[in-house]
Length: 391
Image 1 (cartoon, rainbow, N blue to C red):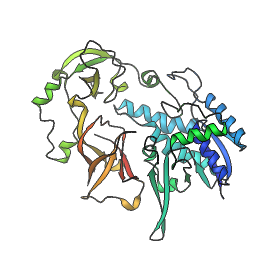
Image 2: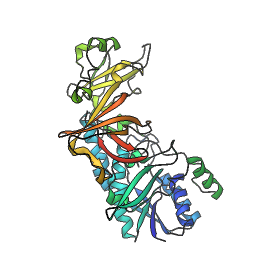
Image 3: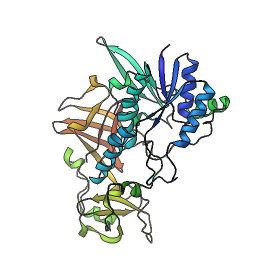
Image 4: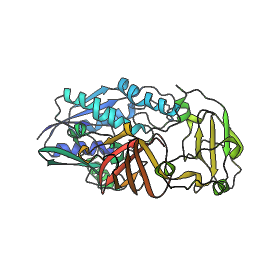
């Protein structure tokens, strides 16, 4: 058996993961991360972690495992929150949970765990790891969780072999209802605790208020683009890779002004809430943003053609492989399953590696492809690689 540090968050998933590890006979220590102190924009108005800390302490006491805390708020602000602000300022929509796993949970947190003598670090993620030997070298596979409704492999799409070597995912092969049942049977404090929502370690936030810490409000126009406009333009021209991934570029004269907003950098493709514009037959969705001119473009209905794209592009320096042995060569094409946001069903696509980067062309049009988010590609249930969507 090994010395294991479990990242105990106070939620039911990490609580049951801790129980399972103890049952397996590991020498276990619980470590709780404090990553955020500021309550600006947090909807509860409370400290984002104090309630979780109480639950984590109760679970550790019940399971009779040592409990410690570590304050990682400095690295978290620098590596996750400052990155968020920078991306939104550029008009891109980052995924802080992916960054949090890469930069905090499986980086600085591992360093802290090693200081406590850990051989492995465990989390409550719904994913699996398999290890095999190829040409004398250990290779770690990151697999989707057995519970299709809770699979969280996407959030780990930026991990490396170096990070996976120390990772354990005790609940990856069981389903959420069973996790709840185990917690209730053990009478753990977290058994009925709701799953966390919002930004990793920050919580549920009013995003514009949260972003105003760094990005000042700025009045701008909301322009509605009628769906008929797309019939006059050759937007579905997929004759080349560059045309297939080209985002829609609108101008003020392509539509009509229907309202105002407080900053284009607060909005993202596919967003419905927060526009505060009524009186339309169908709900309005964001179909484009122009940060330089501070304009938001919207369209009516969730099937508006402006929400759908054929492909996406990832620049060469943003491509990441979990399986280094499966890197694509320039000029090579492969078929994979791809998702470009969490909880999206995997989509059939062809990946084309070119000198400038990776073109991902989907079999079917995709809704809400958003620059700044991560696209991750799978071979069956194995996550092979990922990258930040540029266009």
